[in-house]
Structures are given as structure tokens and as C-alpha cells.
Image (cartoon, rainbow, N blue to C red; front, side):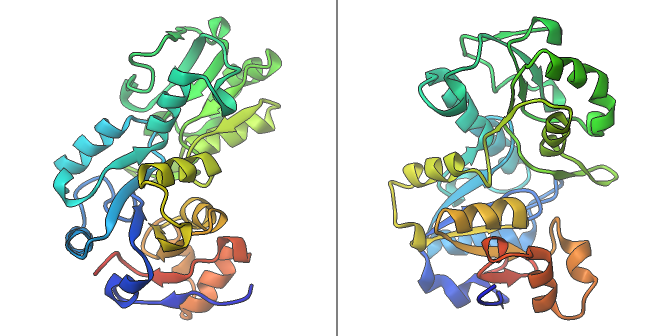
Length: 289
């Protein structure tokens, strides 16, 4: 790797380097209970400084659903410029069927979602199959904590793989914060399906369509003037780096146990990243201005 990440205590130290922010939700803004006070103040200060803020989430739910949840957690919609979720990108792709993994899918899906949420299929010309035998593809939008362990799905997914059903995964996250701590996320179930011989197509961070959609939403700024902030080296940092953007890793999120094992934060980040493509430009323990 060419350079180590630079540790900063607040975004004001690098505010002249970017005009737009792609901001992660879980582990960065909140952990499901309430928006962290320092993170809330940071968003307010960014907005006041004229930065455009797009919350970029691997949630399999639609953007409106995410925005309502953020409001309930304490972040008002007028403090940022919008939400772009992988669920929203997936919904729009399934609506148009014009490109990427969406064009070749059939008309009946077996839906796996969190809290029985159906927003990712509402309003679409798509049949939701009650049984995987009647589906043309699997649409993986989310997972309840109780269904997060991939091994629970072995029998159904083994049969689906034998039938060559493609899986469209609208949330590539490998782990998520559950009631008992970190638990497997939809991306882990998708990886399990691949191990069983199934074909998986992903929408969301770190995959290029998510960042292309974000740039389009921001009216096509230069990528090098966009700062991606998140707690995942695999999704936020790798995706931002691949898109030519600036990146900042929040150390208190998904990698907190790994990073806490070393007294040298710089070396710990380098070891966790493993390659320049996953190395953040900056690190910060908690999101702050």
C-alpha cells in the first residue's frame, strides 16, 4: 500500500477537500436506537457549510422507508439532501428492466425481507411466489435476526441452486447489528448460496451501480470531490475507492473489535484493509465535525 490513512478528530480538518458526502447509516449515524449526538451535529454542520449530503445505505428497503426511520431516530429530512438505498436502486431497476442484472429476470420472485417488508416489490409488475418452487428468481432484500444464520436456509437454497434460480441480493452487507450484537447480514446468505452453486447478482455498496446512481443523484460531480464516509472497509471504503472518491473510515463500527486489538491505530487499519483498494484516506473513531 502506498500510504497510511490519516487519523482526524473531525471533518472540519478536511472540509476544503470535498463538496459532497455519501454517508453510511448503520455504525456511522446510529446503531438502531437513536442517531448519535455528535453525528447529528456533524450532519447539521456539513449542511450549514454548503456540503451536499446523500445518505447511501445497503438497506433493502426503499428510500422513503429509510428516511422515515431516520426521522424517528432523530435526523430530520431537512438536514440532508436525500437517501439512496440499494433497495431503491433495485426497485427502479426492476421497474425499468433496461440494464444490468434486472433485464433477464423472470416475473415471479421468492422474496426474503426484514420485518416482512414488501416495499421493494410494491407497485412492480412482479408476482411474489409463496413457495420457492414457483419462483423465477430469489429477491434477497433483508433478513430478520432470527433467520440470519445461513445454515437455516441450506435445504431450500440447495434446491434453488439445483433449479438454477438466480438470486438478486439488494443488501450486500456481510454482517449487521442485531439485538445480540453482530449477526450475518444478507450478503452472507448470498455468499452461502454461491457456495451451494447458486448464481448471485448484487446491488449496493461496494458495487459500481450504487455509486453511479449516487453520482447521478448528485448531478454528476467530479468523483474526487466526493467523500464516502462509512464503517465498512468491504463496502464503503472499497466501493468509494473503486469509484475514484475520497474515503473516511469510522473506527467504532463494524471493525471496532479488530481495530481495538492494536494500540497502533494506523497499523491496525493497514492490517485490516490488507490492500490499497480497501485503504481509507482518513480515519475517525466516531463521526464528528
